Length: 433
Image 1 (tube, rainbow, N blue to C red):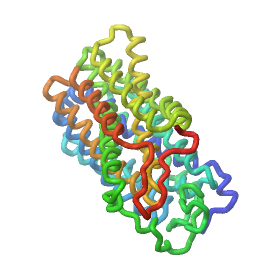
Image 2 (cartoon, one colour):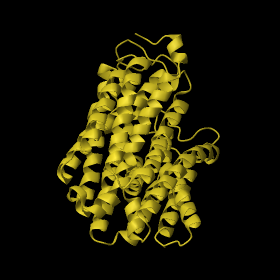
Image 3 (cartoon, helix red, strand yellow):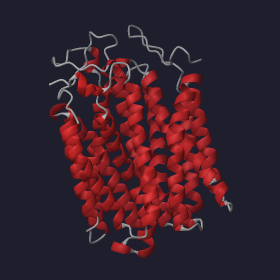
Image 4 (cartoon, rainbow, N blue to C red):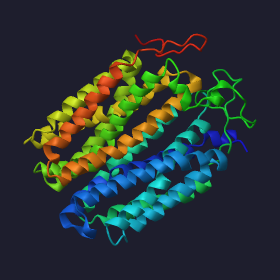
């Protein structure tokens, strides 16, 4: 049944979905915090190859969960899926502690990722169902801050407990178990089958915040598919966005997984690498706020190109060993500001470039291709670590990825001219040049 007005006024859904994203942030960086210790001690038989395997298979699990498990929330309800996925993630995160070797460690991480991969799409879908009319965008942005807050908290925890790496997974699993009863008892269910009310204004559920119980109508929006992106005038734009998304997530996951080890290879201590991972994600939170304000004021294309360009420069600078601890932390902080919000700006631009009937399809395509970048980033960097050339070449690879994203996005027009007989496509908000 629909939520009551009192349930809509409740802050529980806002905070609970935010906390679910905190768990996602934990999973983003937890391997990066423990890999240097595992390689150094060779616990469970870990070496650079084993670490690359564990990092890669974890992301495969998250990708599978996002693609194939998250859509089940439309059939069984957001609340039930969130509860089930957080519980599943918690069980297999605790199980990592009991892994006897690298292979089983990776399998448990794969299984944990299946549950966690569905949490992000389900939580954001829930917030779009729950948010009052006209506030879905703000609610989504606010929920996503939990992602980087979780990463920061995990890096801080690692500073306190590493080299006892098992505590990291115990804390992550127990945090998930603690969240489950609150999700079950305090999270009101949105409609189990959410469809678009095409008669209400713009017809976008994410814009109106309205859900209806009627069967989905047969409309152009309902029939949209990835095949539409292969039709004029979209193919080249979709390809460029996909390349940028791939490179953006390669940077996000590559840095979060391997930054401590890259710094260790450069001669810094393990504790310094963990501090820098924390600083990197603090910069990410600041960058999200600043990038959104500037994109609204100056146009998304200008800011996303500037952000990726500065990311390339800053990543190249990190290849030079900085003796001053203050300057090193400042450099990593500023790098975090630009690298992580660059990827968010790609998604923001996609939502502006494509018409409402194709917006979700285009975003799904960008995110799906980007997931391959998320898998490739740790794998490529891990290969460099195994070859003993991670420093400085790891930072050169990251800088090159940012440059490729710039080259791809330069080809994208400010607005897409619709094909004859098609709907008008607005590429920018009215206040953008």
